[in-house]
Every structure is written in structure tokens, then in C-alpha cells.
Length: 151
Image 1 (cartoon, rainbow, N blue to C red):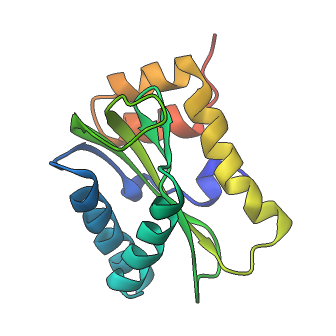
Image 2 (image 1 turned 90 degrees about the vertical axis):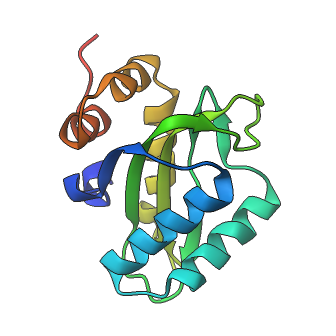
């Protein structure tokens, strides 16, 4: 599975205004619900349940909030770069400015489990993260996430 299998250019946004983690997760839940024709409260509830288990802030200013969602047929993602970093209770206590909001089907097939691993691998690559932070618009942000960066 490749990131472009569950992330579209229209779901890649820059300069997201969020003052805190709950507000950001609520906004991304609303956006996902509108795109998927699902209930925003259901999505937010499942995302918050996952966050209660432990923050999805990976460190280095990146986070991958994710949840399994009933009635979802395939993985779906939103990539957001925040205007200003926010506290996300990340493992390294650093604020987060890059967020990949990932929704997975409840009954995931093996290849769908790779969606989270794909995103995590990209976020662990310093070159990719550098390109994500330098992107001037959603198109550049999308390209930095889905294309292999030349080293």
C-alpha cells in the first residue's frame, strides 16, 4: 500500500489554524466526516479514545492521530501542516506542526495495516520532514509526502 492510496491532494492542507490538540482533532474529524459522509462525532470519539491510550505524537514535531472507524471501506488520510505548533503530549514533549490524521476500517486486511507504517516511515525520514515543513502550498506538501525524496 502506498500513501497515495489513502491520501489525495485535496486532503492535504497548509497553514491550519489550531490553538490546541482537541480543537485540531475536532476540525480534522469534521473534514473527514464531510469527505466520507460519516458522523463527525463518531470519528472524533474514536480518535479521542485512541489518544486516551497514549499520545500519537511521535516526536520531532509530528503526530499520527488514528482510529478504526465502523463502515469505512478503506483507509483515509488528511495531511495537515499547522500555522503554529501546538502541544500534542508528544513522546519528546515537543510541540507538533505536522499531522497525518488517519482513519482505518474496523476489519482491516493485512495490506491496510501497512497504512500506518507507511506514514510513520515517511515521518521518520528527516529529508521528507524538511520538505514538508518547507512546502509553500498543499500541492507541494502532497508531493513531499507521496514522492521519494532524492538524497
